[in-house]
Length: 333
Image (cartoon, rainbow, N blue to C red; front, side, top):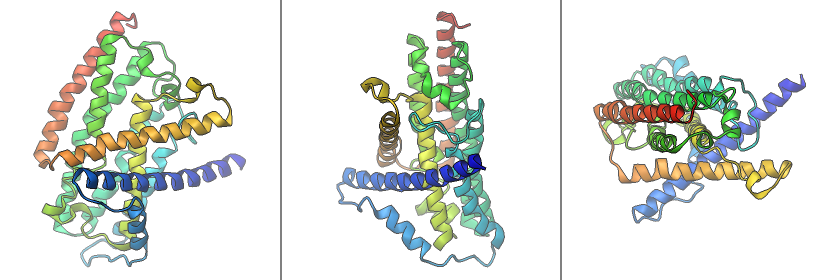
């Protein structure tokens, strides 16, 4: 019973923190974009205000919609986004749930919020949402290839270095892949770092990969019929997924903690590492989401597929070859 209560309490706290951090990241994003475009921009608290207003409004269900499915999908998106966080360590804090193969599980769980969007779009009965849902499915197929390649090759390189449980996030936090590779491996990891920087906006449907929503083409696309509390829950799900996706990339490629460097132990080390972890999340969010969406225009859906499959897929294969050669030269094969 104590274990169950601890898990439930930890989940609630983690969800609240992730929602706060996710909305804060959205505020930073909007503020920086405004300054880059020579505008004042909204205050950092604007995403909190927007969500508060949405929860105060009525949720309208379209006449052609499937009501129970239409209303269920926002909750499914939020719940699945929170579920991802349960398997992620934050700094030196162990995850609430975690097993030897939790990295593979998280890859599957990251798909669920997008699937909830797709089902909700189809359930709305809107032609605009239907087109947006179709684009979301195509985008998922596109970016999952380089994402899976990146994760698997990192775990394989750790396994080649005789590291136990290479698909465990705690293993990645305790043994950085950068510490086991040689010069070729470093080049390969730098390529994977670039891949993750471009996979993240695709996973989060941000410009230039926001074709499922495309306000100027589809009037909001996949979310065009959502309003009120339903749209507010989807906004919270997007905020939590933003934290989960960026934290996922930080754990895999930027896993270092600060406490061993400055010689802090105990509870103080956990606090320092947690703050340092979220600082990395903020920095990665700025460079992989904010800067990219400010300097790029929206891709067509055909361009999204070509970019992810041919350009980033090719870079992923190059990273695989470099890391395999590195393992051979380092005596790991």
